[in-house]
Image (cartoon, rainbow, N blue to C red; front, side, top):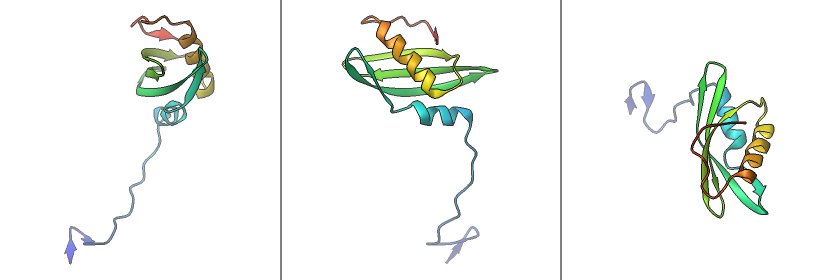
Length: 103
């Protein structure tokens, strides 16, 4: 049986797509584990937003508590950004500021 140019039961060829810089950053950061305060924290990326040449990251840390923040990345490499996030997490209090942070 045929339907809309494809035979039923036949797989359609996969569509090609291009990865964006945000996709690559997401893949490099989301789900990573960082060590801070002698505990492991899982990094969760909720969103990456580009405005001209600036990148903003909405990030959560899942550990003994949930900590969230919005950060502007000044680093060109995900590893350096993760290190900066970890350093920020080291200095946060129990209830961190909701003001976006420049890393």
